Image (cartoon, rainbow over the protein chains, first blue to last red):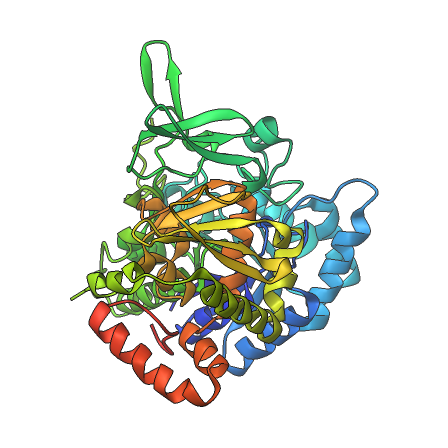
Length: 326
Length: 171
């Protein structure tokens, strides 16, 4: 059976994920070392150790994301995070930076290394380099590949692959995108925040609702209609005579119906996005995907549409997996 | 069937704000003492003054977490100064507080609206979600000997109104 890797932004969400049947939970420390460094989220060292103990007692693994890129001169912050994750009993750390991978491989040889989606390793040559140089055991694939491309990659590599199947959909080359940085000065790559809430403003203006990021108007919707979170990649732009979502609509990924195809493609683990979401989201999504993974294992049809209410824009897409890219 | 209309008369009855504010103040101090993780998670955002606006209620609530202050303000008076506002129906607030509904999903569907300091609202949402609060239990414990009666009353109101007034063990 494929492993279900579930998000936890708080200890309560970790317990919700484990109780709902998650095979593994991923989470991060409450600082800039992880790519979901949002206010009120994440784990202290003590909470991490307690969370890992809770998961292990119930047969679940915990993977610690340390997947931002260290600032020159401040590497000790990231080095301490790797050492503390190992000390807390993490089953693996999820890293993106070459220097940090080299450090972890050399100083923590017993610690299992996963390659974060933030490394944007999207072809066999890149993945094999990470495996050979640092002993990476699993790679989280970027959300820009088709199922056919994932099948082809799996034929040419010896490490496990993990793919996103639900949640917020990043359509950019992750770890390389500078849109948030352009608008706010802060990025997921260096600061752990994409489109940080500190730079988001919602306001009513002339009978419409406006959502701005770093002062830039990203969405304007009629009063009473849902307002998407203002990220540049899912913003509404005017280009020439056209007005619309130039890069991507404000929708979420739901690849439930593709789980059998992903299993056939050799994918080892399915990842759910949403460390910034509540324990209600985590519990509902994990239960639904546990059922889907078990159904796939028995060759039964996939349940669909159970989670539409939880998705951004109340709408979902299969993203690049079944590519109809503009 | 959801029957939130049963709750409305409770709000429309004439009442003095002073006893309500005294009770709200005691509730805030109690929650802060029993759940210190909330203020720790809020960090500097605990200083923010957050206005809670339930449109069909006659009062607005103003919360300032680090000061352990929660006060009611009549709608007929000028609104108090605030750093952020969360607006939505009572049922949505209670469901989010008790972990049966996801805050982002309520926001995406337009059931909750926010304005002002988005980071403070986000921090508060995350801190409260981790605290796994149970409003009925907090009030019952605060009520001392009246606690068992308050629990029973809460159960009756929850059944009749459809509101989520306590934290379910499994949702």
